[in-house]
Length: 558
Image (cartoon, rainbow, N blue to C red):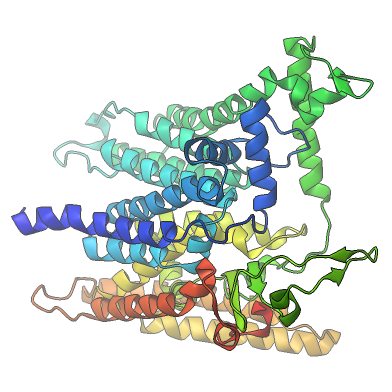
């Protein structure tokens, strides 16, 4: 390895993480008030610092709120304190995405592209600068995915057996899976932040089992050799360990049971909580079980209308992003003219925080270069899955497990639920670019994707006319399904052509401007340009009102 290579190995991830840090920490104290759902989580974090539990019913586990509380304890009960830990974890996730890219692509350029796309994404920037749980969930998911890949590589799951030995003479080597256990801890922390952390945990279990069984078949000729031991090891690391971490996250709740929502029912006399409250350990565990059932009941039965409610099939195209903050300065407010409230009382207006004829907004919408670029590259990812490309399988597993289940969920859902998926969107687009950098056939992939998408959209159109349905949403769903499935079919056809002509070799080293390099450069430049354009509405920077409205590309973005 040359000195230049060593320097780049350190400099590239450092610069990417630094760029993310600047974007996430610059003007972190703005807006200088609680916005959107911060009202819930900052309030809970304050209560944690007082009594280590929430006083009211809480629908999410405690880890994310403890992290917010840590920020308040370190930096103060102010906007920076509320948001600092999320911004730090958001920056660190960019580094982890780069490291995942290195494990998958084995090439620094494509790993850097994935990390750059994550750092420049609007949904990621907004969420990391807002004191909510989703950025903490995303960090633990990315951390768990990276640890799982490191365990795969260090434990030799990709190693080939000695060619001199027959299957019958090979013994499975002993391996340590300490890092897999640490991955289980990370996924357990994700689960203890939001229950949706269960989705990537499921993907991790499937991947780990697949790697184990494939490794056994490669060494012994049979996937079932020692399969029971393999399954047991995976279940311990990625099921029992996460469950244990989740249970441990409630230890403060059990210790301070009398101050919790559930415990107050037993410990309150004449409206006053009795301290100490004499509830046995068994009684406290029973209370925790009742509390978990109440959380489950809440999520299963929740049904409420919300301005920014958006079904999952609209998320990939960013049809309904969420506005977290909006400020303007009306003439009456600028003049300090009192207004009457609902009770007819005169109320003094709050001082303007923006200039007259200016507005400030924070809208949680992604960078179109990443989100729409990923959709264009989806057939290549699907083709990789069809070819059983290990890199594509990892990305698709974490992307699909965290998005596809939401398609069948009827409860209210919001676009920002995609935050833990954003790193895998970036990796997926980088994968598509990497495929273009190889001398692989892609004609059938995109041709079949276009045909499948057209057939899906046409079927939706005909179906709408037959059943006389006005909405066009199902047409776009079928278009997307056809686009992805067609790409998978075309990918299989292209793979056969590659095997026949030995075309799957990289472009010759002397050629700098390969198709992949060109595509990656175009995507990167577009992402930077769109960052500059959208950054004011990702950070709440005041703009002339008409200039700000130019960022509302669609009516549904208002």
